[in-house]
Image (cartoon, rainbow, N blue to C red; front, side):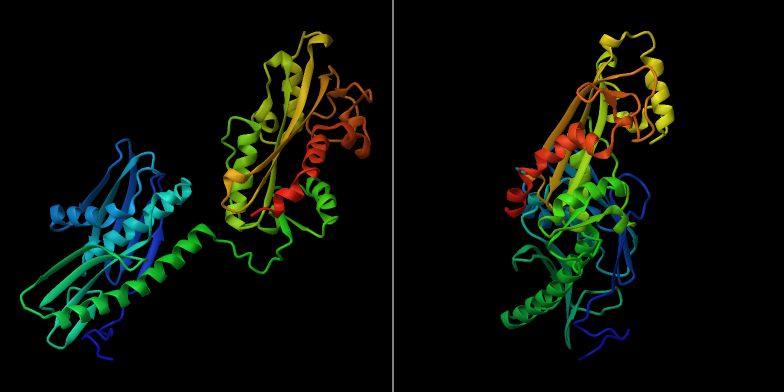
Length: 415
């Protein structure tokens, strides 16, 4: 195979490197490097349903036109709820900066769309490449030092369709040469497409669970006591339970929802997506009538410090000072969400509740959280005074698990 002066073979691609979130900001960005050409790409959504490129390099006007033309056919604005601006700043130009900018922009947009659950907003995948014609043949993925008489710049989909094509040069060529030109280009885009797809797979599915058996579900908790409750239920059907302790590198899921269900969905959907395994998550809390439903979704961090039971109980008792027994009614609530990978619309949601009242003085030495203060009238005990079997018989979690037991098998069998 013929080589260029720098030793790279004529049909070889420039080395590709992607540094995601190169800028440690909330705005999605990537630093893409092909060969020695480096482009920083950032994406910013805006209200109008339009694509805007802000190319910051040589010949910016024509570059913006080409970039927009190449990307436009792939975008389905029936799916996207807004438009976006793709800012492409050329940090170092060692050849083919526009195609490098396009590649960084498209695959950053694809990752952003995935994070927004808008994957269907892109009709197909795209990559861009340059090809050059010399007296001695064709060169793929051009650099500044490549001596060519004619260049072809094109964007190609994984359906082998071109969305943009530009030819510039000083030498005439016939149909056979054009066919060779395109053949070389398509060979390059096929290889380049594979590289970007591999990176996309690593970014969206960073945890390899391929060696884990198919009969496995994940319980999104590090609480082994809670996990054991679910292990008993799934063991009857030969299903193995993993917990977040088995995947210590998974980042904490921010519970930004405004309800128990929203928070449980956040945990279940995100962990199922990351691990590509069915995932069960819960969110629970105490709703006190006299406090208009507080502490609610903030039950674990009611006093400010997460999972400080003593501080949470002290704050609850302080806020109920002077409230008579008959007005200290409360509900313990649990929502369970069972999620399949990348199917948020198919989430299985069940709920469990138990009514009781909040005592003025803690009773009992077992349990956790608000258990010493929550009095259940049928057994006439606080949760902290009950045996595990008694608590399971009446508790919100026990009621939710019994609701789940009735439906999870049929749900799991569905695609």
